[in-house]
Image 1 (tube, rainbow, N blue to C red):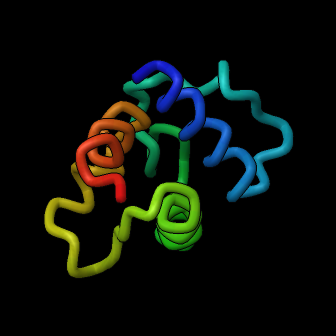
Image 2: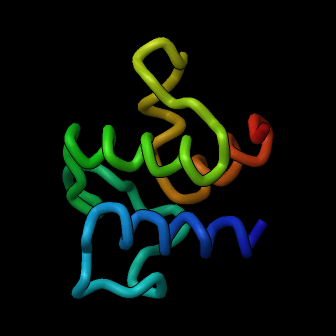
Length: 85
């Protein structure tokens, strides 16, 4: 699971062009949106597409509990691990 979390951090940085950030700068349980990492709804769309392309997991408006899934790297990793195709 630690490897998955590391991959997700790197995917966040790459897909959102956060060039001044390193994977170690993102805590596994840090909130990704608003007061946490500061991502917004556009970032969520881009990250959702990157996750779908990388892991085959669809995260869209029809997915229940999207806010909980996108809460942190840990919650994303758990969801991807359970729903990977």
